[in-house]
Length: 409
Ligand code: AMP
Image (cartoon, rainbow, N blue to C red; front, side, top):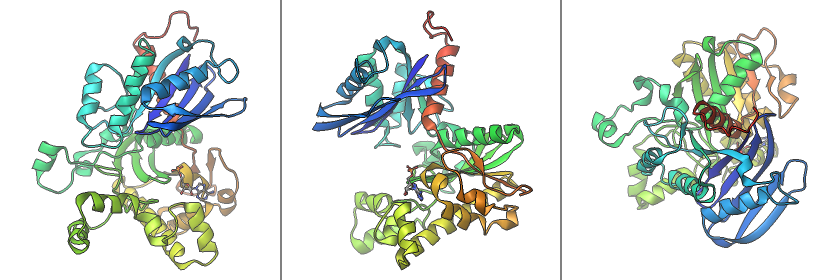
């Protein structure tokens, strides 16, 4: 069974083709600059050279068409015919309160996703374009949507409500939704499997630390709290996002600098975080290099980033009345030995005993970085959101009897 996973943005589209029988990636790639006459398709087939094509791709329908053409290309492709793709899974950022898990796409599901355009104006409209482009190009293929928010729908009201008048929640759906749910779910499941322990019995804090960053408190396999909120702006300090701040700063800054709503939004989403404090970069690798060279602002940016992360870990241990496993994932979590060490060496009171040698060595694999006997197991688990999307798609399509009868599983 072959599943195509699509992550559609407004001007870009990423894809991965999975062979579910062997759990392998047959090809991956992306289309960038959709809407322009110099759009770029980069195709990376497994065990064949990468292909890069520049051409006019004015909309998502054409983008999907080009991807499908590439997948059946006599030299660079991996399939004989497009109908070898059994189902398509889409990443959708916002599922609001309507979606507590992944679902098959139908007209009602599309209507619900469209109702959420207000809550995710940059993402959900692009996802609908992706879904409809697949409908046009492959009218009979079943499609599944997997939501970044769904995993966090198990949070209790005490965690997801904001202490503002209830009308904001009732009328306008103002509440914490959380994001990166597919990643938090994946790494918490993998952590339990890696340790050979039952997920139901574990209290896990998952740290998805990339350009965007969030934590989740996962108790018995369910998200009970997460640091991103109604939007992905809340919580940790990030590459270019501020994370938590006193909300009174918003009207104050608008008044002092004569900013519009759009400008203040842009300041907090695109010009804050590591970038604002370092003054040079939003990229943790560059921050670490500048810090090593003695740059004061980069050092401060790193320290703020680490301090805020450490405070959240403490808070989530409190939220769950303990913690058994701490997981680091995503670009920074998986790769920054310095950040993991800086965080863990000041969390010894929680029972975290980091093994500096294990923390320094190994990459790209699931591994323990705490010492034997550490009360809290500290793990690095590379995230794999695309695989989760493929897996959910496969499970749903199979459950509904939508697998092609001639496909031997
Ligand atoms: P992501 O959004 O998950 O792709 O993560 C991107 C972030 O990971 C960027 O800030 C990168 O600088 C950071 N990153 C990737 N590799 C390393 C590394 N070896 N050390 C520190 N940060 C890294």
